[in-house]
Image (cartoon, rainbow, N blue to C red; front, top):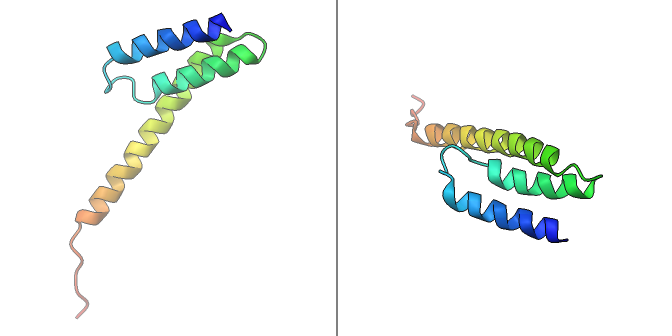
Length: 81
């Protein structure tokens, strides 16, 4: 239990110090992956690494979708004549 608390405290410190542009989704994914890895046969670091990769991937995909929606909304609609 102390390991989980220590890991959460470390993640909180890193999230406060890390730039948001570089780590979008990584920190959140690393925390979730680290906890899941710890519970699943004590693979905390592996879980954190995979969680970081997955979290970053999901954040990039979400940003692409939001950008596409913004572009779609900015296109003027042409009336049918």
